[in-house]
Structure formats: C-alpha cells, structure tokens
Length: 254
Length: 303
View 1 (tube, chains in turn red, blue):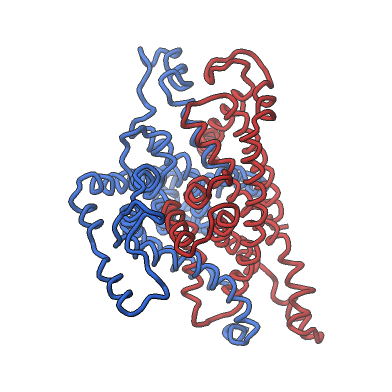
View 2 (cartoon, chains in turn brown, orange):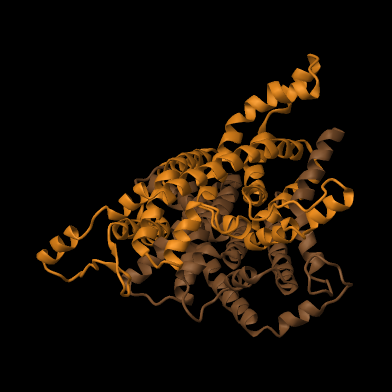
C-alpha cells in the first residue's frame, strides 16, 4: 500500500471520527460551556442519571427498538428467503421494491404517510405506532444482511441433508437456520440500532407520552448546545457502536 | 432448485408476511397521502376535509370525490417558496453527491487496496459511523462550526483568519453536514465494487509501464464508474428529503423540501399541503428509487 493511499485512509477516518471524539471529550468537561475546557469532570453523567424525562425517553426508545427489531428481523428474514430462494414468482418485483425502497426513501415521506394511515384508521399514536413504523423501515436492512449470508451459503450442505432423506422442513431447521443464525442476529442488532436512532419518523408517528430518546435530545438541542447532551450522545454512540461491532463480527466471513 | 421452490403454498407462506406488512405500511400510506394532498385543510381532527365515510352511500362517495381538487398543487406551483425549496433541495443534494463521489472514490480505493488482514477492521471502522446516531453526528458539528466553536478557535490560533468565520447557519454548513453524514453510505457500495475488480488488470497496466496514478485513472476508474454513479444516486435520494441536517446546521432560512414539509405539518398544521409536498418529493425520488431497486434485483439474482 502506497504512502498516498495510507494518507487517504488516515484522513478519511479522521474526518469520520474527529467530530464524535470531540463530542465525547467535551462530555467530560467541567465547564458549562461546550467549547471551553474547564477540567475533567463526570458531573454531566451524574446529571443524566437525575434527568427524569431523558431516562423515561430512553426507556421508551429501548422498548420500541426491541419490539421493532424483533418484528423486522422476522419479516426481513422471510423476505430474504423469498428473494434468494424462490426463483421467479409473480410478486417478486413488488417484494424487491418494498424491501429496498424504504431504505432510501426520505424519512419525512415515510413518517408523514404512516401518520396519515394511523389517523385514517383511528389508531392512537404511541408505542404501538412507533413499533409499526420502525419495523417497516428496518425490514429492508435485515433483508439485505440476511440475504447476503444466504447467497454466500454453501448449497451443497443442504443438498447433502436432503439426499440423506431429510424433509425440506428438517433441512431448513437443522442446516439452513443454524448457518443463517449469525446473520439473523446481526440483522436484529442493526434494526435495533436504527430504531434507537430514528428521529424523523418517530416525530410524526409518536403521540403524547411516547417521547423517544432522539426526540428528547432533538428538543434539547434546539434550545442550545449543552454538555449534558454531549454526555447522553456519548453513551448512545457507545451503545450503538458496541451493537454494530457485535453485528459485524457475526457477519464476518471466517 | 431455481424457479421451482417459489410455487408451493409453503413458499407463499414465507413471502406473504413481508408482502402484506410492507404493502399495508409502506404502499397504502402513499395512496392515503396522495388522497389527502387533494383535500382541503380544516380546523378539526383530523385536520382535513373531506373525510371519507367508509359506510357511506354511493352519493357519499361521489360528493367525496367532488370535494377533491388540485388546489395544494397550485400553491406549490405558484408560490415561489416551494419552487425555490425544490430547486435548492436538488442543488444541495446534487452538489453533495458530487463531493461525495470525489471524496468517496479515493477512500474506497484505499480501503480496497489495504492489506487483506486489516481490511475487515478498516471496513468496520467506516461502517460504524453510518449506523451511529445520525442526530448525534450532526449535533457534533454545531460545536465545531459555530463562531466561538473549535474550528474557528483553531483557525484563529494558527493565524489563518483574523476574526471568526461565519460557517454555522450557512449553506456551507449544510453541505459539510450532508457530506459527513452520508460518506459511509457512499464508500460502502463503492468499496464492494472496487474490491471485486481483478487485480491482474492493474498489474498488467503496471507491467506495461503505467504509474500508479495512470493505472488508477485508466484502469480502476473506468471499471468502477458505474459503482460511483450508483453510490452517488444512493446518497442523492435520502439527501433530497433531508430534514435534520438543514434544520440544525442550516439556520432558519435554509430552504429544503424536507424542512418545508416538516414546518407545514408541525408548525402550520396544514396536513394537505404537507402531503402535497410529500408527493412532490416522491416524484423527484421515484426515478432514482426504481433504478436502485433494479440494481438490488440484479444483486439478488447474482449467484
């Protein structure tokens, strides 16, 4: 690898990480001012623990992310199986579109249109609508992660099991599913973090009493930059990073 | 098993749940949005008229249909605010996509050329920020870009500028935010393309006497061009409708469709007009989305 390419890599990673590092460093700032260093302190983390609304929002986010993660993992895995294994079927183009479009569709469109649906059918806004909305936009990401694994899977293992007399159901349960499990778990972790992170869609579909962590952080940020937001953000980044690293270990080719 | 597995009832049972769920919560909502964009705003709950009575008679249906009109689209067309918002969204997303292609291409190339042992880790390092708290990553830039922020402090100390630069709440801040937030989204697919390129082609060019720059420009770049275009498109779609970045970094007079939609909905409570903006946004991105879907389908078909 040439020194030039090394420099490109170093600069690229520095650009990606410097803002996050700055944010984390200043969360340990004793000063009230975000950009003036006043010595090391953990007072903002202590302040977090006493911040009732923020903790309540974090609890809402956690529950929503767990449920939305579970639903989208099931739906995304089924979609990946259909797309990778069913060859040609009539609704294939529709399913591909429905799986891929939500990943790139601007969030304001998804949020507004889902809200209009919920209002139209008279569903009260709250945890349930949050879970439905998040499960919908996370499904595609799970399908991509699981689909990649499915395509990399050695088909001869399944064929061998079938040749030895296993029924299709048995082949799936004893060969395919165990091989797929790490990708399914990785898909769940990614869906979980995406749900935990979403601000825009949640703002549309959530109701009073169901404020998520990003919604709470956003309303604080609108009031101005403060070190407590830095502390909360640092913890959030840490949690998400751990989940993503776990997911990428699970999907790494060994 | 290709082609045969997809027909039985068991196969249908596999694809039915995602099909039904995504139709109900992704497709049907669009139809409703379209319908409400043709309605009028009202001070009621829900705040639009007419409201369809599902059990109504035939006359009920026809009067419902008659009450729909294109008034909101006339507003979008004739009020310069919305036209400017649409144009400036396209300009922001287009410029950011171009910058992303310029920055992402060398970065993806460097990743693909990194020693095999380090590659998985390096790729993970690029991926992590993509999944990590969009809001937090945008927020981090406020403290860096504001007049008394870290960037200005550094520039002042180095003597590059005499007085703090006004960056936050300008178009430049929005562009920085867009490029920063979407860089991993650009690099990942590009890396996938570049790591699949046959190294023998590069080696052949080098053996024939081409320098590293020439090899990159005449061999790698042309082969990766479709990937670069796809990556830029992939970023362009969500960036056109971006809300968080223009809202937090762009200041109050940044015009972007996502932000206009948001304020029509949350501040003015004009749901029908917000819906019309959503339909406009959808019309802008639908072409690129279909292209992306077809690319995804080709990816799925590949074995």
